Length: 139
Image (cartoon, rainbow, N blue to C red; front, top):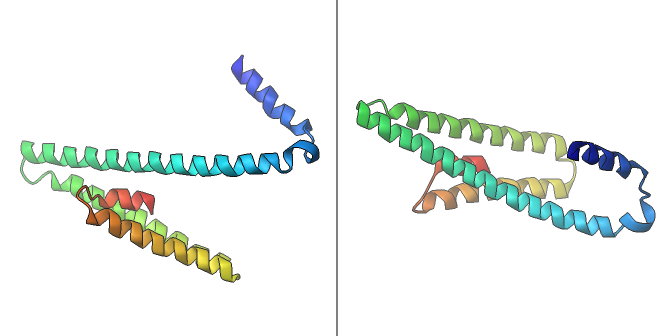
């Protein structure tokens, strides 16, 4: 029943007029909601990355205690995952420069993104609980 209600409400939004109610009010609500959503999404991604790293390091330690030399495969998998994620980030930033470099403000925002990516990686690796995989997920 709740799925039918959900579909009905989604369909009902088609007939809501834009001008009198939703012009300014909805804009402000959507801005606040978007900021909250992005912050929550980042927290979830950070938690996922820490859990992923801890799981694979734990598997590496267990494999190393069972048979010496086999735990390095899990550590190599962590490094391979980091490399894939960093290469994807570099390609994405290069594509941003390629397709959106016509405007000065676009170049500024893309450059700020690049600088912040390097800064996040540096800050993450300088701490006690450093994890390259976490930085790669954030970048």
